[in-house]
Length: 113
Image (cartoon, rainbow, N blue to C red):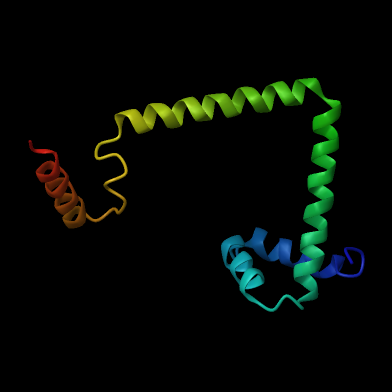
C-alpha cells in the first residue's frame, strides 16, 4: 500500500512543506472523508511503520527511555504548576473578556457563604 501510493504521499508532504495546504486541513479532510480513500490507508500504514520503528528503538535504547521519561515528568510538573497558578481554574474556558467577566462573577457569587 505504501509503495503503491508513495508518489501521492510525497506530493502531500511537499504541499504541506510549501504551505499550499496545512496539515490540520489535510487531517480534517482525510478524517472526514470516506474510509475508502486509498491515500488515507497508505498514510495510516506509513504511520504504523513509523510507530513500530520508534517502539523498536524505544525497547533497544535505555537512554531514549530515560530522556522521554524525564521530559514527560518536566511537562507534567509544568502543567501542575500552571494549573495551580491559573486564575479561574477550569471556569474560564474561552478567550472572550465579556464571557470571562461573567464566569468570574458567577464563581464569586457561588462561593459566598
